[in-house]
Length: 262
Image (cartoon, rainbow, N blue to C red; front, side, top):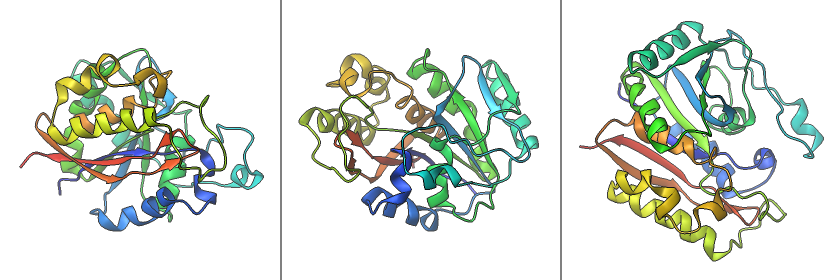
């Protein structure tokens, strides 16, 4: 069973508390996909200079945020880990000459457990996380994904969890504020056109080529998971946008599916 890979914009942690288009989309997403045997999430909130792979058998839920509704801090996502799969992932990365390590300390940050609590609410699938490196660029993260492409034949769903746009200095409540400024849409639409055209070279040069790249991503960690998901589709890929909406004025909540090109 060859699974797609996905890029999901995970938004603010309170996404799961509000009646939002992205919440409805994520709640219905699992039913549209073949059921995986495990999920690997490259999360914007798990960062390291060496590719860490979570290896705990029972990962902890991390409440890595502040100032939100108190109910969020009581929520747990009790999915199991898979230490054997973690070792397999490290072996694939090392075979591609990408330094990697097992990490038994990190658990599920909100880049993983917030969207997965909607996509797979029963938490009965093993979930692992993969670290992104905010000091490396698109090439490195494409290579991460390409090294892990065989997992898609092994029933593992590879997910990049970040944000299509992510400038927290420009957000404005309430959560459902969808009146984004033009520069938010200009960036997201530029990315979308290049994904639909299969323009990998243009995407690799996104910081120089995309309009308002730094306005939308003052730091890059929320965009880099897209390249992991894209790389996991293989050297020849096709992209399909699954969702687009706006939260908090400046967060474009796009979701994309990647498959090997026919």
